[in-house]
Image (cartoon, rainbow, N blue to C red; front, top):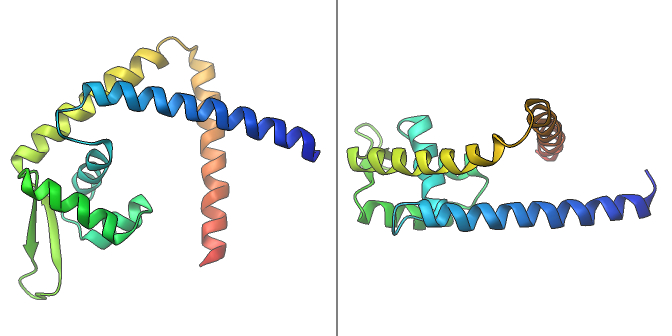
Length: 151
């Protein structure tokens, strides 16, 4: 593909992608539980999916720094949404688990997100949704292959 055409595609993609993300972020912010950020929801969701997790595992899964996850977890612990538990056999190891309160808040946040996203997706034909997901999955595979090559 010619460089000029690629530049045009990149500009269009950046503009559209940023606009979609910004709009979703604003709308989801209005629908999230007060005091909870989208980043905190991502961390809680990852802990929920994994069950018991370490900060390192969550950071790796979310492709963010340990310090970023630690800061988010500190706040979640203050809200009593996450517990830190030292491993019985290895005191250096600290496990993260959602509290019952954290599970409830996560469910509320995910339900609100699902409602917002479904409202928009329902307006697209099913074949367009399939195409969109196919393209995102291809792009993700390219990125993952490059990540694997970097290691």
